[in-house]
Length: 169
Image (tube, rainbow, N blue to C red; front, side):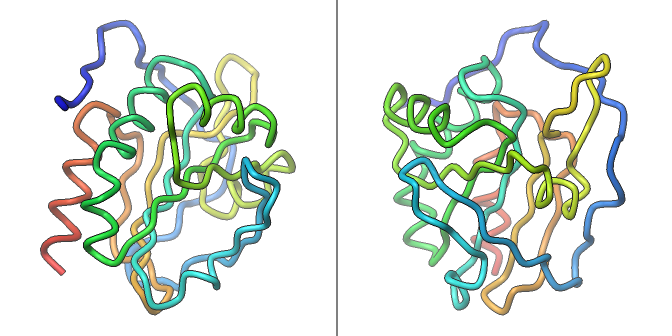
C-alpha cells in the first residue's frame, strides 16, 4: 500500500510553551499514561526494545491521521527491528479509541490530559492561545536513552525517515 501524502495548508507555526526537549544521549524521561484500551503504558515496560515515541496535535485531523496511518502501514517493519510505536496527544482515551478504531490502528495511543509527559518532552505548544502537542518524535534505545530527536516533523515521510535511522542501529 502506498504512503499517504499531505496536501498544502496543514502546516502551522507553533510557538513554544514548554521547556526544552531532551536531546540525544540523555536518559528518556519516565512516564506512565493511559492508552486507548484503558491500560496504563509506561516507558519502563519496553526496556530492551527501541521505542518510537511520537507526539501529535489532535486525533482525526489530516496531518495526524496521515502520520498514524503511515506508522500503522510500517508497523511490521518496526516490529522486525525490535521496536514499538507509541503516540501521545492531549486527547482523551475515548478520543484515541475512536481514532484507532476508525483507522485500524493497533499500536498504543497515550492520553496526556494533564500535559505532564508532553511538557517533560518539550512538546507542549500554543496555537493561537490553545495548548496542544507539537509534532515531535523521540527514538529511545533499548537502554532507555534518547537516540534521536525530530522536532516539528512533516508527517508524510516521517515513518520512512525513522525506519532508516533504526536500520542503521
